[in-house]
Length: 159
Image (cartoon, rainbow, N blue to C red):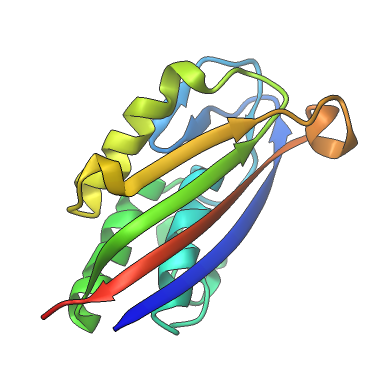
């Protein structure tokens, strides 16, 4: 049995925060605003996995009103999501994600992001695709006001 999930996440770029995407700290003058580390890529991946299993959304499992998630690494949240997959008897078929941001360039960091996701989700790196595109100076992405990430996942039932 296969299940498909998809998600989109958006966070505002602000001063005084680190920019973390795919578990990678990227040198940049702005970071993403959020309760956790605000890793939009991992949030989209997490929510697409949760959705594929029919378990609601990221806020249901990791609410931004809970102090225990304040400043938490989204890599930890991804690990918890993997544990949900284990409990439900699913494994990754594949993940296809995109990061939409004007700056900085993502290309130097994509392979490390893919390695991080594959390691935590216990799958091969070839099952994790991450790509990036610019806003071409259009909308809030093009004006460097925020970053968007979208993810689609295919889960396979084990056994």
